Image (cartoon, rainbow, N blue to C red):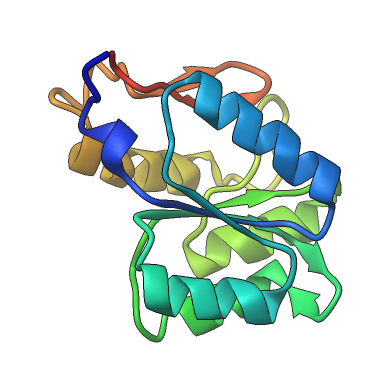
Length: 155
């Protein structure tokens, strides 16, 4: 099977729950991604990011030695890769904190009193401009209304 442009990209996954990391890795692997680096702590994630130079990071908000927001700030000192927060928390403050740092968070659908849809859309658009042939007709980073976004690998 021929690998697409996206299949060759490195993904850093940082989550302290091993089972959840396995699930995310399985999902990404099923979609053709094979270059996934996983870590369970802020410190390990930071070390891997410095040495492996990933193209995308997926970070948990709550980690045993800190949080995803602090990890993102540290990552921003040496890289500007897209960052997606993966969290079970559904608090608006966490979503806004992530958006304020420039990350993608769970989409803010429906009745959003904060008015940050445009900010999220701008971040998604910037990523699409980097990875899509035609950002106006995305096939790699698609919107799943009510859930968020899915990264599809072209085969």
